[in-house]
Length: 459
Image 1: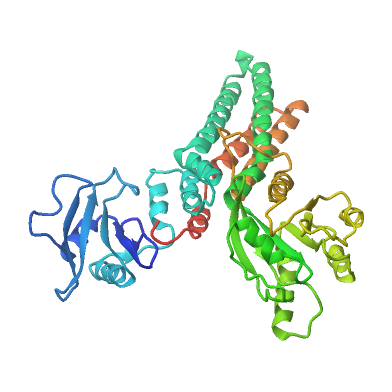
Image 2: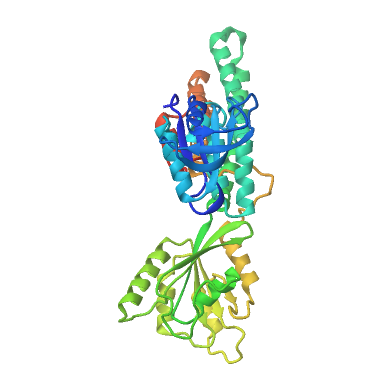
């Protein structure tokens, strides 16, 4: 309920210098005054956004923590409601006790994303901007942060709103044509419909094509390292991370479970998964690791299959190649630094069947730049974009654009078949409504609830 005062811990739980308990709603100040005491002055004063030093007390009058408190007066706040932020010491207990005391004072615990939801419902952000908040929080690379920050600023919303405005102008012309048929506006209206729909379809199709790139920069991709035991999978993970994350030994089967880490490949967050070696084994624990490896392969977007240059191709290698035949696979010949090599590079190239074959040395770190380039090229497949472009990053937004394009196509088809302009206008209005689902100008309450359900509590 918008009339409630909500509260939540807005910083991660754990040990830190500062933790923040945030309140938003009409009773924020009253609740904060009931638990906060300051000796030097009355609180809150006339100034908004002023930090004031004091102490928070529980319902029994016991001091909980020494704090700095800040009152932000509506409507110039994130939620456009009165907001109070209590800056506590960043430990689990002081934060939990302050939150409990605030709730005992009359606030209720905020739901996931409820602060951002209120910002949307109160007109502080549109829906596309509100969704970008979580992308800013979760961004793992500078490129991902740049795209999310541009959406939060309103770049995508401005582009969508411009398209909607052009469609509304066209609908107004159709209305005039229907209301005043004697003015001879139909021929002019038909030409306008064709011109505008064709221009918008071209813009939208370009956004749809680049939407996959936007989603990759925002969400990242997963890559699984597979191969026979002791071919250098964990060494490769360590080399790509530039740190010793995985245990490396000469004993086959050292890696029993999956290890996941994220690295930055030209702005793309790449989640690398090091897996147990694929082989038949009687070891119960290793069997579980092998089963998990196979599951990871099924889910992964990229497979990095590692061969040992020191050994020839074995039946196990061939079995693994067969299992990734339909996957985006990079074939890596590791230990390229050794002099005596038994592997048949031509045979590996034949098995790759046109997919990249890369010689590397995880030990020496050679070939990694080439590997990263091949990963980027495989993922983007020509989708690379300029820094200033407005990118779509959500599947929901892409789906709305696809519906818009389909409605515009149906409007053009109606024009070509000589349909009355008032019937064509139905498709144009549907296109306008589909675009509105992106910014929230035409959206259901159920959809809004579903979007904010994925947010963290406290934002």
